[in-house]
Length: 270
DNA sequence: TGGCCTTTGAAGGCT
DNA sequence: AGCCTTCAAAGGCCA
Picture 1 (spheres, rainbow, N blue to C red):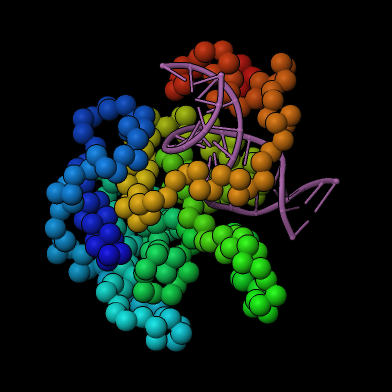
Picture 2: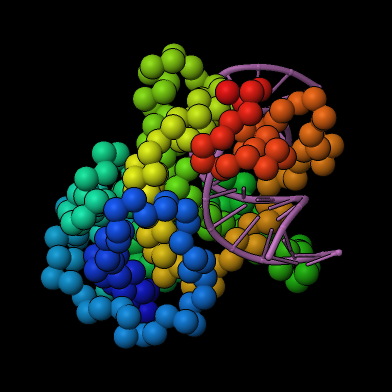
């Protein structure tokens, strides 16, 4: 089952048409969450290219898992260099973001039913830490157990959007250039640089993000962004409310003054 | 130790 | 339809 899903997702990407039309507006594509609208025949047959992606360094599964596993239909594919293998603009994308480096798309045991026991970076325990040693469960009520079970459910992270992918790639560069380490400051710089990118350059990241969303959908069909709501502590609303004098972020500022999202900047945000 | 900061975009909910 | 809220990443900072 999972094998089919991964194969389908992989092939879907391998056969995905490149961005069409030069100068195409890089704005996000229409939502892809309507799975029902995708006909089964839209997933092509397994590409022979897939054979190249079986991992040269398969991570052995822990004994307890491997013993229980009846079959091992799929090894964790090494998808590093995936984009360089694909044709079209994505292959020329000069960055390091790929399935290999992007945690939410790395394949591993976190994927339900996946045979390998490598923890999936996109699927993390709610605490983000190793589980505590087990204790006497007989002391627990069923309700408590249910609550705990729910709490221990691994978290599937949201797929990264275009800007997040850009940030992930460019962060190291900015850190090196500016000798900054504080993410808040770095992100401000990256935000400005993002807007300085040409539409063609941004389009690469929008396309990549679109593919990531699509793969995420294939890997976690029932997942919803709503699943992770409330798992981070919400910020206080007061802090989010903008003062009349604070220009806020460029995005908020443009929204407030009705400026063009791509080109216009108000004074304080320059 | 855990939330905040800071960015943009996606998605879900509400009016 | 439009607005609002939350969460994705990152790491220093602070209570």
